[in-house]
Length: 54
Image 1 (cartoon, rainbow, N blue to C red):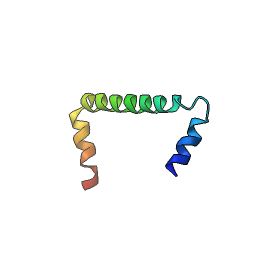
Image 2 (tube, rainbow, N blue to C red):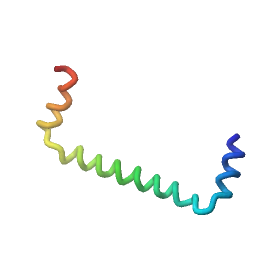
Image 3 (spheres, rainbow, N blue to C red):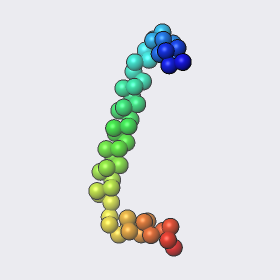
Image 4 (cartoon, rainbow, N blue to C red):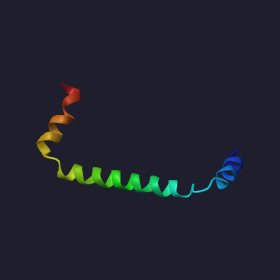
């Protein structure tokens, strides 16, 4: 089945751009998330982390 999918994907023109776009979106999202975590105020993080216990 994987062989069928691989051979089918090769016949589609311009499909090689989609993995590059996916990797770019993934990298940008997690980079922004990483910076947000370090920039967030500690009081806010404590307040939000205790919400399930209240």
